[in-house]
Image 1 (cartoon, rainbow, N blue to C red):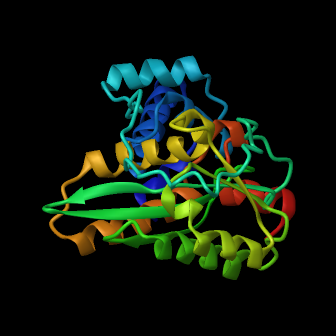
Image 2: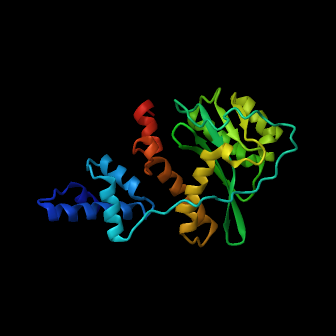
Image 3: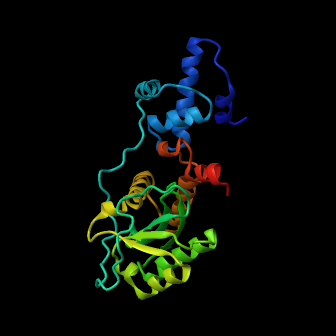
Length: 263
């Protein structure tokens, strides 16, 4: 039996062993998630496993062990995109209302850049505002319109029916391009754009980039572009399927969606 499985199933016999049991549980969860979980997420994970341990107790044990989750930077510098010429500006339909009652109603998209040695890698994801799930993403060495359209195409292949979805972006020239706008028309999607130079209008996308960079990019050294790409694939899979969120009642994005709406 795996060490983690063992700790999840043993039962403490007395107060002392119960304390040690809680310590081992918390250490195990912390290590499994590579130090990314703070006391709130560890508490939620414990409850998900059936252990009702108060968050203050979890925090106390973590302080005793001198461990803590990584904190998100107050601001993350993303790719400084060149804005379009203003000819294809869409109304800000989202207007910072990031709540969605169902999946596939409101999406967000953006570009960010990651340096690897003397090159840049650009990530173009689409995020569902319903649960924060990354629906699709593409990677390239160039921040082209082709890259963001490729992300759209992948989303369509995954979801199939994207008609009527509002997709929110900033005013980058890629999102103002005729090719991108044509793709949205073909998919019957509705564009929405942030106000000029206002990153808070796309806060959910910014939050994902912050998590990615804090939990992966700033946490490791990558020997090659291929290694970085592989780690990004792994992180997004982890982010969608394993990493729990308090706002999703202690579930991962995919788990939350399938729990309420099936596959």
